Length: 74
Image (cartoon, rainbow, N blue to C red):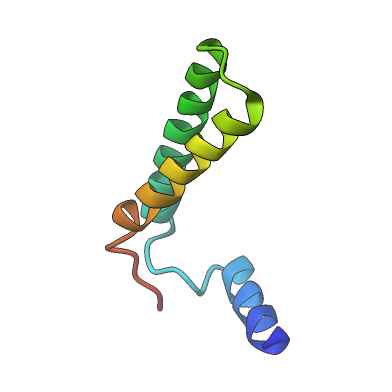
């Protein structure tokens, strides 16, 4: 299992794992920015930090499969 992860990491850093890395970074940035914005907005509502982090993580984790549904690997 460790060897598979190591091999994937090597291909990723060589630029040979993802077909369209710009699309991957763009979709990941969209998801991350929405999650961060939600976290900041929930912090302004004066929710406890633990609850704010849990809600923003849940929303971001739910959203990422939809953003990366067209993700293609080589």
